[in-house]
Length: 163
Image (cartoon, rainbow, N blue to C red; front, side):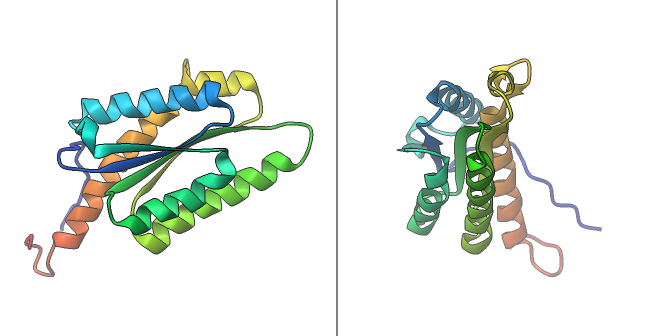
């Protein structure tokens, strides 16, 4: 049996963090959490680019452009969509999450999902650095681990030896 598991080392990895300015009270806290986690796992400060977009709707397009650039090992998408009184929440949340998944699958670049989709402001507070943790930090860890899993998969030969 061969077991492949991601390491939590960000040495020599490059990241693009795409962050929504809408609901910046939450997205900035998510960005702080993601940056802290990347730096704690030995990602060089110079190996992190932060790109700001107007809202969650724009995250997939900019994430795709970042993936196509070939500059990054992984992309971290951050933002917050909070339910209101209209169906707008469902449209934005669904299409944004499908779009980010599509970028990862078609471009074969890990895209970590650090976008809060909450019913209330209290839930967003809890998930952006309060009692619910920081989903930006969690997304950063997920990105590091997934990149390292993908690198291992791409270097393992049929006989189980690394290329």
